[in-house]
Picture 1 (cartoon, rainbow, N blue to C red):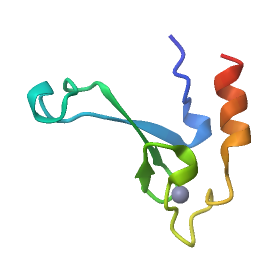
Picture 2 (spheres, rainbow, N blue to C red):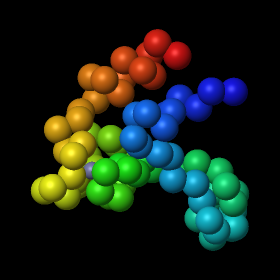
Picture 3 (cartoon, rainbow, N blue to C red):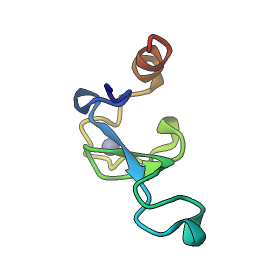
Picture 4 (cartoon, rainbow, N blue to C red):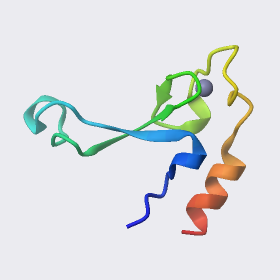
Length: 72
Ligand SMILES: [Zn+2]
């Protein structure tokens, strides 16, 4: 299965590293957070990622991302 957030998008889904009773997510289950591979910052919404000022992706907003998602 192809991941919706493929490597070329340069974002990755954060997966839980703690047991389900700790944060409500099983180990390895996506938490819904998205991490920017440019600066390592993360947020639940890609628009809200607090990119570093020198992040190469800080200009990258959701039109591109939504297009990918909606075309899935
Ligand atoms: Zn970034």
